[in-house]
Image 1 (cartoon, rainbow, N blue to C red):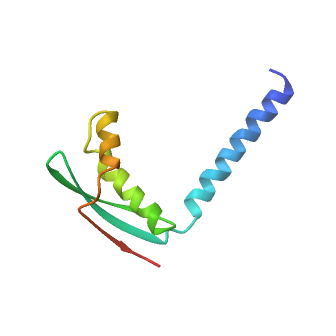
Image 2 (image 1 turned 180 degrees about the horizontal axis):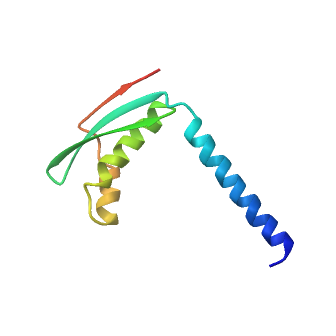
Length: 90
């Protein structure tokens, strides 16, 4: 490998590490709980985010994650309207 390739790889790794550190340090401001009814089962999960929209999305993703099998069901679950949702935070 040439020196420029190694420098590019190291630079990419440093950028990735900086992003991970930034993402873990940014304060979570909103926490939401979402309940979904999917495949005749109600599943409630919570999610956190910097905004209410991010927190709701995280909660819905979490509820769908363990409740589906296959990509088609995952897409259908993501498009499902929550039975209930409740958020706390600014």
